[in-house]
Length: 218
Image 1 (cartoon, rainbow, N blue to C red):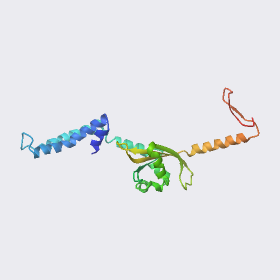
Image 2: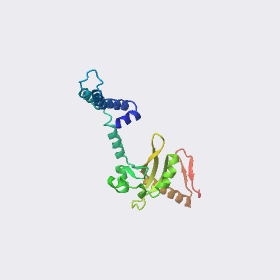
Image 3: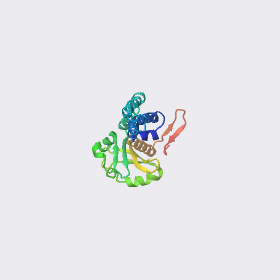
Image 4: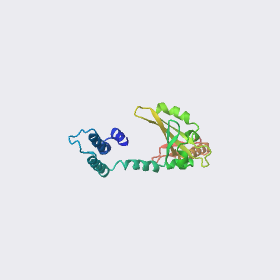
């Protein structure tokens, strides 16, 4: 089933490898059918052992020449686990089915506690978010974890996961820590407010002397 899916969905070298592997795996079945139904001119000869030889050759070519079926899933898993952003994959029943290590650190739970948990326990407003996301495929918002002692601020991005028919089969949730940016913006607004309230005139120019900003006192 896996190789049929790869042969149908992938392109180029992935499809070629999948087809070779499929031929190798189907060869003994075909050889056995030929023997059982006596479809060969050599009625008494069992082609199954010879077909297994073809299987070995196909597997050898698939794994030594292409080396992609065993590499691609590991590469994807490595990227997923190495991401600094917290990622949760949620199915249509609102249950978490996948979580990366960054998500474990954000929520203070290991994978065993996150997988299978209803996402509403983490995000009480989940149903409202998905209602907004469905027609637009993607939405983002600023989010603060409830009762977070670190008072972290995240950019929460929610994307639909769809099948080939365009039907929503789940959701991808990505949390990016933007606490430093938010704090820096707050500090900047505070500084601007202080400058605007100052009694002394303040003038800011660029390197060419062009005026960029002045306060009301100026």
